[in-house]
Length: 203
Image (cartoon, rainbow, N blue to C red; front, side, top):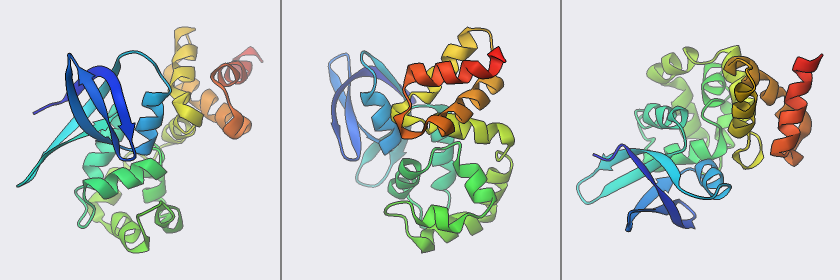
């Protein structure tokens, strides 16, 4: 089974991309958020991979980080939520924002995810195993991570890394960048997030 791929993005389509690894093109299904993060960067890319085997196909699902892959694995265990619907959820909600939304039973928020619908959203929320998974991860720290990861064009993780490289603890960096992302909104840039996040530590 393939666990990860490292190569160049050869092409992007609505539901995934082709990753060229040493001349071999791998067709990988991805969430919209992962695709946005891939196209925001240049050079070789690294994707975590979940390999799913069915009677008529072997399908690769790609994830930018472990949190997204973990959320995908949890979602596909819910009855009627297959891999494609799981990707819809992860396209509409950051994986770090998913546990708090499920734990708080935010039915409207999940039902508004494009292509999901109220019935499937309710099934996700009401599934006991999903509640157990979500409650264990719905922490204040996760809220900060969620806000940071929701920054435009996937720049949140880069901003967090910049603060960590300056000696700031990761959970503090995530909280600062998360709050900065909320303050700056959709117009946030990488430099802007870093500057705004650093102001909290300069006071």
